Structure formats: C-alpha cells, structure tokens
Length: 307
Length: 297
Image (cartoon, rainbow over the protein chains, first blue to last red):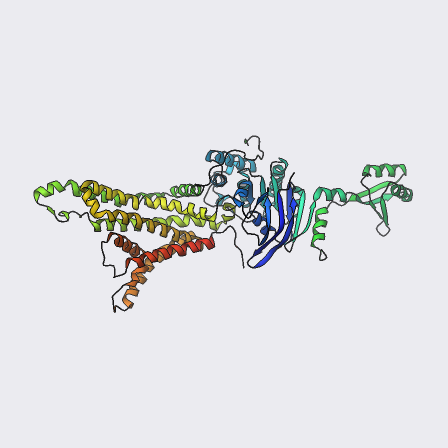
C-alpha cells in the first residue's frame, strides 16, 4: 500500500513555542499508534493533520493531499474522535450524528441511514433518541466514535479512545477499534497513554519525545524479533544440549547466578527444534520465556536520556 | 452498512455541494429552536403587530369613502383613526426591531453556547466546514427568523398601503420601503453578530442573554445620563443617544426616510458608524474565539 501520511520536515509552533520539530517520514500502517509522554506533541500532531494548526515549516500530506492547501478535501476523508468531551448536550445522539454526517457531505437520507446504522454498530442503538447530555462517560465515548465513523471516512483519528472508561467499556471500545481496523477499509491513527491499548490495536507505533519522532517501528516485526530472545530453565545435563544448540546457530550464555540460560535463535531455528534437541539430549525444559512486553521496552528505550 | 451486518463500511455514494453547506447548521438550529414551546410562542406573538398594522391600513382605507361623505376625513386620513404616514411606519419599524432584538437575545445564545460548553468545535471543524461557514450557519437562522418579522412584513405593509392609496403615495414615500429594507437588515445583522459574539465570548447561555439585555437597557440609561452631563454649548447635541442601540437604528430609519429629524441633533452618519463599529467588533471577537482548539500561551 502507498503511504497515506507523508511528513516532510514538519515543524509546528504554538503560542511562540516550537512543539513539533522537523518531523519526516512516510507511514502506511493500517493502524498507527501514537505514543509519548505529556507534552510530547501527540495532540498537536493530530490537530495538524486535521488542519487545526498551520505548519511553521514543512508539509504534511494525507492520501497525497497537502494539509496546507487541500484541507477541505482531506476533511472529507477524515474522521476525528477528540480526547475531551465534544458534543451538544441538548441534542439527541441520532440528530447530532446525522448532522455531522451531513456536514461531511452526505445527502440527508444517506446521513440519516448511516447515523442509525453507526449508532447500532457502536452499541448505542437503543439510546439513540436520548439527549447526549444524559449519556454516561462510556456512552459519550461511543457516541464520539460514531461521529468519527458515520460518514465512512478512509482515515480515523482517535485521540485517547479509552479515556475514562471502565474495564468493560475499554474492552468494548478496543474491540470496536480492532473490528474497524480489520475491515481493511480504513486507516487508523490512535493516540494513547496506555501501551496496552496501542499494542492491542496497532500494527505500527510512532513514539514522540519533545516534539520529535524518537522511534517508529512495526510491532509485528518487533515481536518476531523478540521471540528469538529466549530465557530457558532446564533440568539435566545441559552442556551437550547447549553445544548442539550452538551447532544449530544459536548464541548461548549461561546465567549461573539465576540458573538460567539466555539464548538467541537464528531465523531458521524454531522453538519446536529446541524441544526436539532437548528430547534427544534427555534434557527437560522446565521454563521457556520470550519477551512479551516488547512495546514497553521500545517505549522505555525511546524515552531514555541517551536517545 | 446494514444493521444486521454490524460492520464498518466506507461511504462511496455521492456528496452534496459545498455552497449551501452552512445551511445544514441553520436547519438544525431551527429544529432546536422550534423544540422550545416558549420561543415558538413568542415568535408567533411577533407577528401580531404587523397584522394589527395591516388591519389599521385596511380600516383607514375602507372607511375613507364613508368618512369623506360624512366629513370625517381630514388631512391625516380618517379622523379618529391612526393616520398612515411616515410616523406610522416608523413606529411599526421600532416595535418590530425591538421584538427582533428580543428574539435574537433569547435564541442566539442557545444556538452557540451549547457548542462551546461541551467543546464541540473540534468535531465541527474536523468536518469540511470553515469557521466562516459555521458563523454564517448560526447567523443564517437568526436572519431568517428576524427577516420574517422585520423587513418582510414592513415591505408588505408599504405595498398594502401603496395598493390602497395608489402609486402616487408610493412615489412620494418610496423612502419608507428603502428604510425598512436597509435599516432592518442593518439591525438584524448587527444584533445577530453581537449576540453570537457575546455568546461565544461568555460561553454561558444565561450569562450571554443577561449581558445582551443589560447592554441594551443599561446603554439607554447610560446614554440619558451622559446627555444630562454633556455641555449643551455651542450646539446641544445629545451624543448619549448613540449608546442606545434602539434609538440608533431609529435614527438611521429616519435618516433614510428624511422623516422625524429631532433626534438630539445627532447626525445620521454617526448612528450608522456606531452600528458598523458594533458589527466589526463582533466579527473581531468571533474571529478570535471561534476556533477548533484553544492554544494556551
């Protein structure tokens, strides 16, 4: 797929302060997670994509359209779910979602149909004639999602979608986001403080720090790589087993203090091969770990002072 | 995307044109306004004075023949009835302008503050709609509602009078029609802009409504105080009248009709300048305040 976001030396100033500095790159993930500490520039970047802030220098292109000159065309293709509450309290959900769909260019009838369908889709079908002011926080989050997707955009920007949700609400929101992603009809950019949310919904991650991109990576690739770093605990004579492993191309180090073996496997070796090797050398593998918290490691690494 | 399928699907159908996109906001505002029975009731009452005025015009002419025969017809029309002249239309204009002001005062804050108090601007402006279109959409509904009670009935009354009194009357009083049209537009645009700007600035519906009423009535009182304080030499000009918006628009009406001239010797162009300054100030506030996101310095 062609890159749908291109950043070209993008810098953004707000209130006389440089918030984003010289961002560049082409991004084409189905779902890009945006991470970073408070003040890193996540929301500013999202709002620049929406055309709320003009770049001080450089450009942003979304689906090949320049944010500076083609923002109106871009907004037809965008859906936005802001971080904070954004609704009209005395309007019913159906009327508000329909109005937003009409503002996105849908004819009245189509807007009405899609408003109903979208509210059912996010789980607010039964409450769609209630005023938004009477909704709970979780319902308002879902209503914001409905507003973001009612006009069927090609790119949906979600700013802290699970903000303030209880665990069942969070699960429901993440399930919806994954479902939307898996249709393959839409690209997602999700900003969140919660690494698990990003890990569950995104395939690529951009980490911002002090207004610059500290890291950009593909999570699947990272997971695949991390799966090759193993921690083993064995029972039996481990020396022949380890020698055989080295002959297969593995790198091995023994941690005597913790009674553990650290192993790096080459691409060609599968975990199944290790079990076969252990069986052949009458060694019992009592524990085998590979790093699961890859995103946390990536994030901490990106946030380290040396970076 | 059918309900039973419960999945996300991109919209691939046709899109509406952009020229009248702002009218969507106006339409939804109107729906919200009509939801309020109180406002709908008040709006209905706003049509009563023009209907009464039309009745007076009709009565004046229908009894004219009888009055002429009985000698009850004088220089100002039928003796005992309100004469249909410049002052009659001036009064109709002032009444309708006041009602339009009250309508704007109660309607404008409800259309805007609900967007602001729950931070809906980022959602609006993530759609293909500009800040100018947003303001146009909000003002359009006010202009539509107030037009129906100001210049439209005004022109109908002039037409009714011209129809009954003949084209000679229209030729002699064509300025009344122009005054109705121009003064009404100036009034409804300025008050709408002012009310929307005040609502955006103050953010709270009741506070904005109170401020509108306060400025209207306090301005009149302050103006009177100023007139008593200001020196009357060398020319007794009552500049304080310029603080009373209701009087200011009446001055403009009179300036165009060349009718009632004794307005504290305040020149008509100064009244026009005041209205334009209020409108420009309101546009300035709207430009600064209607934004998708606040930037904290």
